[in-house]
Length: 462
Image (cartoon, rainbow, N blue to C red; front, side):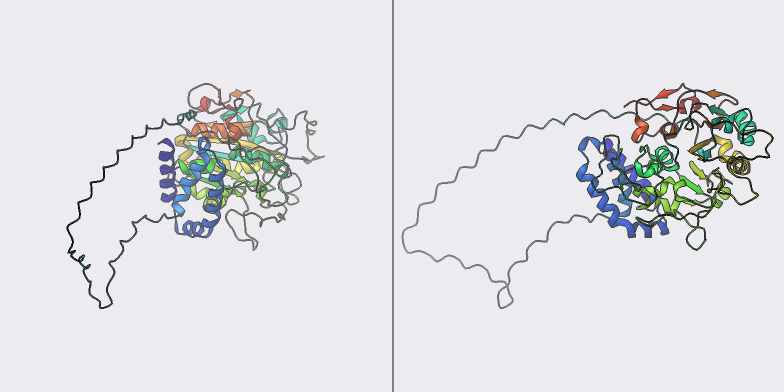
């Protein structure tokens, strides 16, 4: 009954979010989605139906089931004259009447089968209760190194000296890889790095048809575009009737016009414009669960939409993922000559956009800003005219730190627990009372959410 209830709730949530544009996308993609769902059903055991049930529930909004009807009763045969002819009576016999046949004994009733006892099912891990945070804003940047971001002589002065005193610094937040996609995908789905994502997906390649998912939903093999049954945090929010948006700076189509959910064609390579948008900064464009049901096209939008959405609580999504372009994300050598470059460009982006977020009604009411790093700048620029020499190469480039700013967080505090992108996903799920996906459900994955809801640091169980 619990699975059916979850299925029904997800179907209602999906149906309630349909728009004219999304409906047309659903119709166009129903065959692809249905094929994936059927394939998932054939490869998913009865004890591991959570992701499949979620996807089926969302897909019910895009498909109609015909009502079963009883077959029509056969019409009585008509005679050649068009009128019904009664059956002829048997001819009378001149012989003595036959003896009446002995009545056939009624068959003995078969014994009723004993009801089968239901098969034992594994207990489901209880999802945490949602906390006071109802609006989360994640800004994803490239890291110049922990000391360069938060040290005593930072290359990001707005982050280190203006924003840092307002929140909690996660001093031991580390990445899984230096590239962007492995960390971003882990932070929104719990999927681990693979050779394709570690290369930032040079081509937009599907997973092999034989790729399997384990009990946690982690997909095996190497690929970029995840199968339709692989869920994301965005899928979870939709199932919980919560809203999400990804805001991508500079996202345009091939003609240069603002567009939504932009990604390369299948098996094609992306040719990013210097300092412009790149799909490798957009993890939501790599999941069929969002592509095939129209959610990416509806919610993955240009950054220009953010400012107007911040004006009211009602128009602000519960989860906002914000990514600058290749220049403002903090990658050296991507900005126009004479403009701030590398860490300076990322700091300028924060200085321009963070005050708008902090001034928004949704943030003031129950918001959390997370400034995180999803990649490492491979070659931070060196300014020979700078008054302070650049810091020496760091021993651990994956240690990047992160910052939490909220009225529910202690200003100026530090948290030295070991966190990573799986922790970012687990914490986001905990904040909204959702179960954990993929490797975010690992026993050693820590969550910083309890510190924002009045508890202590905790870890998820397997």
